[in-house]
Amino acid sequence: MNEYKKAYIAGGCFWGMEDLFRKRPGVVDTEVGYQGGENENPTYHNHPGHAEGIEITYDPEKTSFKELLDFFFRMHDPTTVNRQGNDRGSSYRSAIFYQNDAEKQEAEEVIGLVDESGKWPSKVVTTLEPWTTFWPAEDYHQDYLVKNPNGYTCHFVRFEDSEAFLK
Image 1: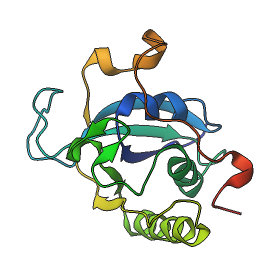
Image 2: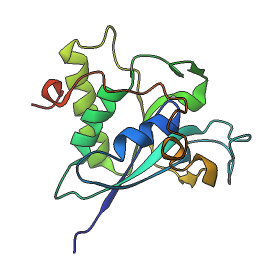
Image 3: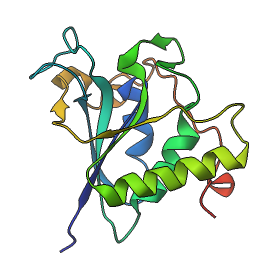
Image 4: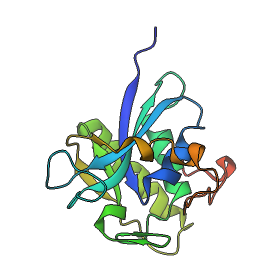
């Protein structure tokens, strides 16, 4: 049996991120929630400082942390501070919540590759934040775009796999 790993990222409204990541090879499960904020047991209406993020459970034999980050930087705009599409505020910041020094180093390497590529009009502003408790969002937010296929999302793949930052 495989030993799955988890990754924690934020990049705007969690609905669209979850919908795109759930379809990635090697991703076993996704859950939306709040991370990196000031209060315990945050809710949609009370999550000061928390980012809307996702917990990605993945099979490291089928994908890697770096490959997940590569996709992350292709499906949201990592060059806007506290904004993604129409969503504004620190809840919508681009962030990677690293769980150890190896993940932090890999995230720094991928950010360097993204910046060097010149595919985005300016430099990456994604923050690297130490992992903190991931608080699952309310049930109605989980799998939102599956339940509401015409729901709002500002996420889409800007660069196809052939244009990946990892070569």
